[in-house]
Length: 385
Length: 209
Figure 1 (cartoon, chains in turn orange, cyan):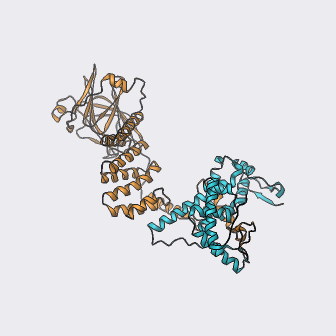
Figure 2: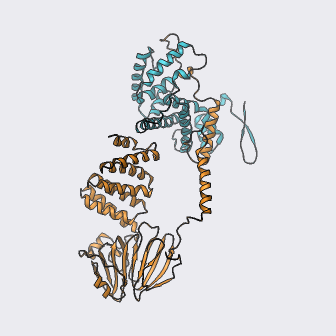
């Protein structure tokens, strides 16, 4: 088409010939400079090329802040070995009975029982490995920490991430009692080479034979046992939970099963998914909650939390809890794709819980953080109701 | 013949640009650009920047936003150059990226306008009549203004292919590629847009390709 004196002029010129170029030479050069510099930096430009770079301002502010923090004497170092909370002293290689629990600088605590001995085998930023040579020790491991805790005994290995549990190595065998969270007990003599012991359960492995787990002991039983820590709080009573029969355990986990806790968690995640698909929402929620607790720093944990929150919101009618669980995912910050969705769903959960003001505030926060987010339209529609 | 300096950390090298009758094809430039030839990258940029910026400007009707989109488009294109399966189709691929970026901006604009009504809306100062070449007659300016109103009333799914085809002069296949739809669909949309534009302006079009 063309624009001319005769409206029916059909000269085949595109209209652009009647228009100025979109960019003049200065504009062409300006955009090219920005493309080249951003390309060299390996990032995509989001800032208008005509505005003084906000990044320069932010960099200056960061430098000022770093200098101030440095002068203030506050330094954030990567997590190193665990130390005592009281005076920051290094842990001795061998820990023996203590009258009071040893508080550690990550918030965890150790209570070493009378006549007991623990040798610390490894202690760094991402793991704490100790060998219980004799006696018992109660561990209160702070959840969410960066370290994987491993307690070795000559009969089995106990692996935890954030739990409260006790380990007793006596003449008769090994007992692992869990008050909170879940631990994995591994060993050649453990049925299926690994078992999961949940809160309220106790796993016992006799030196000569395998014993099924029983409900956690009372105070009286605990104090009557050799080497029981003097300040051991009474584990809760719970119904007796039997270990899977060896044959079932073997069928469930073959002798070649990989000794990777991740695979167990994946299996649990799959079980949770299957329960959800089958409409067993409470069961699925419980399983997702366990994966979330056991893998708080892994993408699996965030995905489990997200799935749990969805269940709470969509099927279990618990919008308040859903909002909290979505907030947990957002705080973890990874995986990024999940964070955006979690923030948006949290807004929905808050809305449904009647917390309209919080929902609106979160909506504004979402829009600031994700100006071109996938869920903008939904968020908009929700707070506009 | 033009000489241009190619920057080099150790020494300056002067090389001649190819003559018009030996113009390097897009495919050849893409191949060189994939080998980190910065001259080839710049050639690709200069060859296609106006169609990218023009597409963005006609749709966004704002110079600053159009410039941003042009910048984003080339950054993305150069970042993903290895993924381009048909180097000869570089321009169409580029325009498709630009259209995608434009649509994102338009979506963000409408959401922002709804969520934050107190914010100043983006000023759409680049209507067709404002972009006419110097020396356009008053009648031409009036025609462009009428056309601009008509085009602005089109839904985005019709406005985009119409602008690409009728204003930017893109081929039908290229327009379809940029809009992410079939040739039949893009023809249908352009034809429907033609009807609306023709009703407002009295201009008729004919695609003879």
